[in-house]
Length: 64
Figure 1 (cartoon, rainbow, N blue to C red):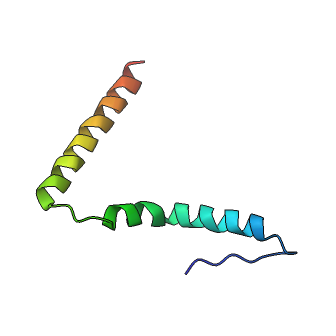
Figure 2: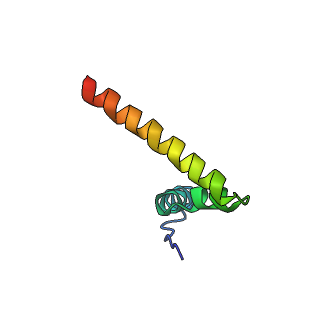
């Protein structure tokens, strides 16, 4: 459970800090990932596509 203390009635600052902690823990991306069921083959295909994309980015960065 993520906790944030509110100091001097600074609810806006505490809410911002809470959202940052959740994002750092990966809660929004995990929710998006679990929203719909993906077949294993589709999941593998997407992972392969992402790997190819990342490899191209690395190669492009190394060429410069």
